[in-house]
Image (cartoon, rainbow, N blue to C red; front, side, top):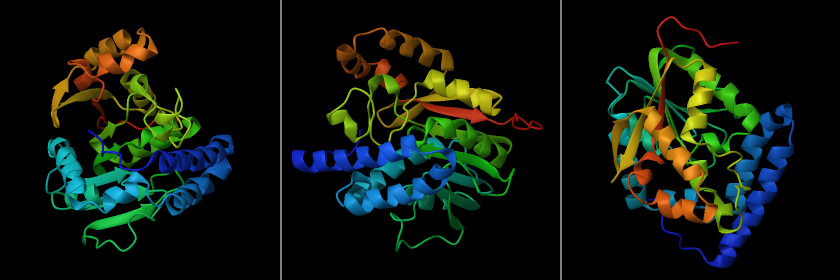
Length: 285
């Protein structure tokens, strides 16, 4: 469950107009322009929308702690004291800071450092700014990579490139744990209040089926999934996600969210997708 909305309709509308304007610039930009714009536009968004949920959640320690605890229940399946952990799109870095207690080294790669200004950082933590596609950490060094609400923020032309860069950063046998809102129940950005398709900084939302396909294209040899129910995660076969999505996809849009709120769809449509890098394999070129 996401944070409760406390803003007025006027404040939400203002956020929507600003984000739609900035996202439109990013959608229309060339690849070279996007390398600069990811950072510049997100910094601009946070300056112009001071009540952005990412910023207000930072000011709510209880909500932040609860969100971190839920994610760590999943990540502790993979982390060991000797692990190198990478979070892509870490937001306020509260999850990365917590993971630093269970890992040898933590990298956080983001397009903006605006949210984490002034935060006290663990000694084994390193924040690295990216152009939106690159993962500038040592190749083959990461045991567990993670992103939550990140894939949907990438320009569609950059998504596969970033996945390949995550793959290259992983050590043999390393895993990339990816959580992204399901396209079938979207949009999930601020445009959910106004549009039928995401028009804000969710540049492309995905189904788990689509995500598994591009993971394979990036070189991951094995794809697994963990369904979410009552803030716990359970391993499920990927084919169950595909079946659930095929059922929901044929429903009228007006019915999709109602069905998606019921079990087992609620659990399956919020699943984390995990890609594993096999030993001795290189990313396809």
